[in-house]
Image (cartoon, rainbow, N blue to C red; front, top):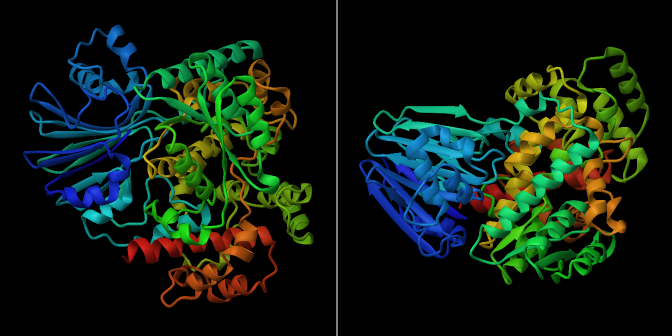
Length: 613
């Protein structure tokens, strides 16, 4: 796990890179410049500590900088008869590239963002992993190209300007859709994509080398027992690889849920007395007692991390600014705290990321398993709209009433608005208060949505496909990567292994949602590994008391930011609506109000503390 930066026709400031990316690679920093290409690498030493120095060269032709881990690289060397001078997975990538060119990607199982320069062809090859675990952003203006692991690094290297139209996506999604970023001429390389750049002309060819969409179009005919056995086998292989592919100790995050529970239980088979870490909250959010049951069963070296938000006011700006862009997900706060605490004990940690998106872990999936809301049905739409207008929004997001109200809301909508209402649900039903001036700012997302919505697959597969492409890619993986790496901690996600990414989408829908039971197959698998008390627990995650924060602890912070001179929010939100939110004079649920205000607060913190600094 590392940080990388590179450029064409631009001399990098290694000092500026260190200031912004040192946390990603505190162990070693090295640069290399040849022709008009400049590479810089910051290393967090985990595998082949002595022989894995980067930038790495092969035969005076190829040079690579690499961020990530290739968990099957030793297997690749054996099966493809590749011989090198080290045991580094970085060298394995170079050997594969020398032999197979861009086709090397199909062999890799892991998380990665890397750049390879071919001195003979004068071409740069940049690639990103299937799920987008490891980040990569690039700036291109026709005269120069600069790329880096984080947006803050790019901003530190050159002046950047805001791309106003992209902020409408943020207000609806809580993140920037797909390859969009807050800056002009800056693009995020999408998951499963690569670039080929002619370093003489600066011509960029972008191609998709892997897409989960293709696997949702497939349907396996495996019985439930066969699917259960395969998932068990794939998950065991993935966990084993992630435990053994490290020269440092590997631990595991352990919540009271089945995803991290399964990961920990399986990891314990390959490493005894593994270190586990649980977040402990005060009140209703505390899952520590459930996690302790797993720790006891597998005799892990368990640490309970008590999270207090007493210093939230002081830490808020620092945590938000780590992301380099406005970031809505409030669970970034506890994610940062638990990462900081875990780093005191080790450098590599397993997590359960991706299980919900692949196996049906969200409650909102249940209605889509019964009915395809993405199909146009004018009768249902009109009835739902009428019923919704007769009811008031719910105040308790966990209540059955609120669940029913949101169901009516999404059934009354069209196209991509259905997905937005079913998902993060930030500005939905209040989107007319966005000052868009007639701009169809969702046209890119709508086009991608329609491609999926019009395919001949179930409603459940459609929403899970969309979640993988949006929520997982732009929110959840970003959240954990930044929270981990801000503390020089590497997170590994067994559920995002190549085998599960390509198998789980094609499983029978009934193996994911059965009746009102979410993640059915994983719950059945849990019976083999976990205490009975965990198996039927609902999905929780890092649920934090956002409403209380906005109304109490951070009330003054929210008000000061959103009413300050030159507030960015005033450019995007109608003033009357914004003032009504702040003064709590609008008819809106407390949860919805808190969600919108938090979205705007995160944007203001980024604007004033990152962009204007």
